[in-house]
Image 1 (tube, helix red, strand yellow):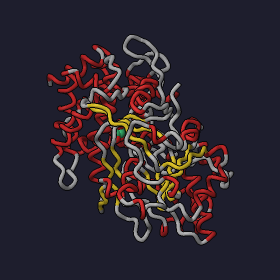
Image 2 (tube, protein in one colour):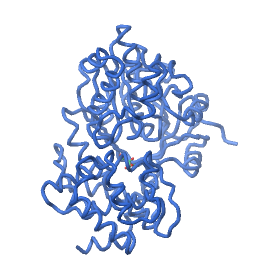
Image 3 (spheres, helix red, strand yellow):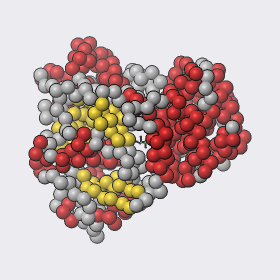
Image 4 (cartoon, rainbow, N blue to C red):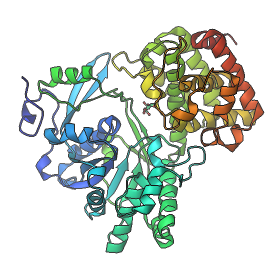
Length: 491
Ligand code: CS2
């Protein structure tokens, strides 16, 4: 039997090892949402920054937090927080062991303990990747959802929270009371103006507890916005075997990722200390919004479109979907005809070149990114990925038939059966409302489009919006997703 990766076996791993002394690291960052993405993105930047100058980075170890399940902790703790990242491309696999994750905790096991960890003066940054639905907000308006069960819980039990706003505000309240400077809150989720959004949610949640606390948060806590990018599929059993074959040790928590990475961070840390992530390639800029908009619309928007239409056409992964020339043509049309005209390029970025690079990334044959994975939580993703673009197209009267087909495919997919009538396991916080009661007919489409938390008060009542999606919907129902995509290519 192969030995397990851990502090005592680390030297035997056949991989690039951390180039710093882990025993000298102290925690300075709490990361909330210990999924594959941050372990293949933020922690890589952090390890690189530490390696660039271990002497000045001793205070930037990471405590990882899961808000729900113990599974990450259960895998990582026996490995002393060590795990493998495998960079995969057509030219080969590059394994590397990450070293700056020091400890993993599970919030529900000891919420008060986590609030104390967050209130510790050594913690200066809280990074967050909990996916869209973890923010307990209304995706269409970006406001706190006061009737979210977790928010109701946290208002009743502010010292033992369960939600992200609940934990942040409880810890910030303690820091204020104890005269400790607040930490910087760094949202790294695919949400527009994620810093501003989190600031608003924290303030709104705090105001429900105490107006003075809300005002203190508003004027003292920095919430930089960020744009994060790296394709990181959920790890599978095959990936565990791959990591073991590569490193020669058992690792039950490897993450697989593409070579590309990007992290753009709003430069509003003020006097707060931070690791030199720029040495690892992070870009600190005055305005992140153009980067976010470009990425959310051009990458995530097409990802979701390919996920629904690709899945319904029988494709399991994004790479398989874009290997089909019909989908390539559709994708080119989506970018060049419908999305790019709504995006203003961030400095030094050529949007056509960005699109070609995205296509190359999607086509990476070594990355098995499942359409069903990206299709998850569409009700939380559609507003920033597709609907903002559609609003812009409606404003100028420009066509948006491909985007309409993607919205129709979302409604079809979440109705719960594929084109052959086989059930789809729809994972979405609004799954019950999205599921078709009986037939998928125009009445079902209308019911879904009337959901204001997705479509807003504007689109849910806009006849032009409904008509265009309905035309796409009819195309889907009559010949199936693949034929509908092919037909749009002819227009
Ligand atoms: C994907 C993203 O799962 C999804 O919804 O669109 O996770 C995507 O892979 C990343 O944002 C890429 O940076």
